[in-house]
Length: 244
Length: 244
DNA sequence: AAGTGGTCTAGACCACGGT
DNA sequence: CCGTGGTCTAGACCACTTA
Image (cartoon, rainbow over all chains, first blue to last red; front, side):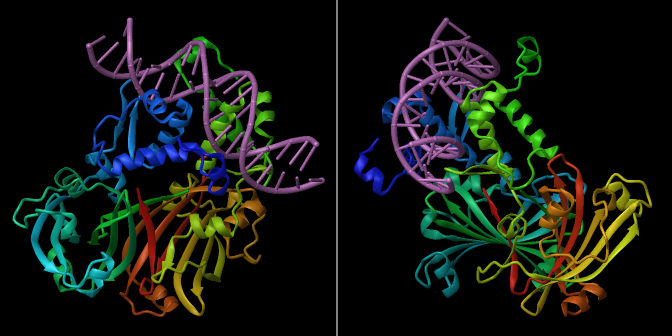
């Protein structure tokens, strides 16, 4: 690795951090796609001219950030958006009795719309740029519990057809269909009163309290690729979180 | 460390995990109180008969779980409930403009009450056991934003006097006054309609949507030491969370 | 200067999964 | 059996803090 001592003093970065960056760069540029096996620790160490322990430290961090998955005896693999990840890392609604289950989705509409001023600023686009606009209701059994509205910047999803069927797990869809991997999301929660549309969709009275979850989803290189507003009934379910 | 090979096969635990347990045991039994310095890596390694690297791995895990804090050149210290920890790890309400600030507290009442059936079961106590019951309103500036109700099992807080003044940061208070350190909390969030009491306390109409945060706080040895219900106005603030 | 944690190395051995 | 990741060691050196 480029470990010239004179620069090292000016902008010191540990070797393992440089190794991590080199590996992350290859995840971003798609050298190793989701599910692919990385070279073994020994191979990476030899290639980069560092010790195996340094590679291990870089990979341990990447495991902690869920960029890769390691399996003893098998190898190291790029993390995928499987059902597990959706359920345990990107879905926090749980039944009050503790049962956790991904709800089904009933898509109501998929439209191409021009970005208004706010959406354009949010996605760093010009006003009027194309957005994809998805509305769906999510149900547990026959009971509707979430009214969901999703916005995508169309330029990041080239060839997206509003008529094509959408699976329940959108992040897996983004990943396999558009090579867009969501690695991180920020959520902001509020309590709001149901408006006429949500009230009808969820079968509650107008003004009924709903949990509003406003989510921004980002890729590994920090690009915002999805904005999502979920309005949830919380009579029988809750949003679970652990503080440490 | 007790590394008898015949047991090691039956119930294999890595050495560093055993080291961690040994260290955590001393945190639980109070050998090292909050803010105290742990022995250096070398001393711990010598004492337990393992290498420095193994101690380091155990301590790294404990840093990740926020049980200890390490400062280069200074040493390793038992984590404390300072203002930072309260604000960044145990308080998730943020103003919509991104400003984060701990609200002030106005205590409304502190009472000793007998546990009803539900509370007794929650705290693993007999019905009628003594609970301490705190009600307070939390304000940003002059604006009330949270109506808060807190239950404590009295037997874990010996000598607690309902008349004594309560500071804003309760976890720091539990820690210094009763040697109770909260290390972990589970929260479950719902949207609810304001009842008459909360409506009056928060200056909203009855039925107004409020964010209900139901928190259970645990000590290092897994004992439930606090149950808390916070009802929050979310017109200008939100609950922030990051998914990874 | 001395002591602490932080990085990096080289090498041994163990546990696991597939051939 | 071999190759993978996982553990453990011993030792060198660096970065930071305090005295």
